[in-house]
Length: 90
Image (tube, rainbow, N blue to C red; front, side, top):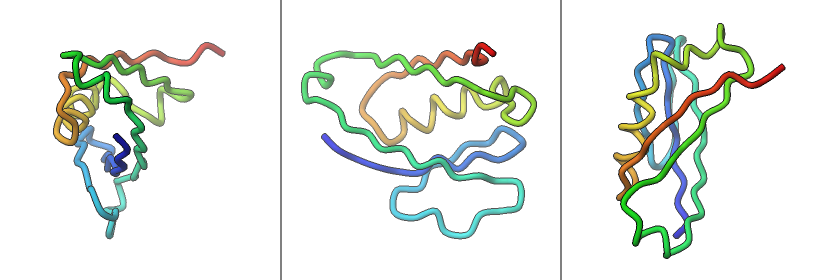
């Protein structure tokens, strides 16, 4: 299955999804295009694991968006998602 969508993340930690186009963003928002190419065998598994790596912890307040990212991905896929966030090693 191939699908794509946008995660729209605000500096307050709010995450929403857009399926067609980003449209107009607020000053405090960024859009992240997500392209998923999933084998059909994944539909037999109840859970996906996601690891997000941040290069700059100050710019990307990952701890504030953890639950929002999880909810956003679960909102556009049929999967239960576990998200782990790690700061990239320097």
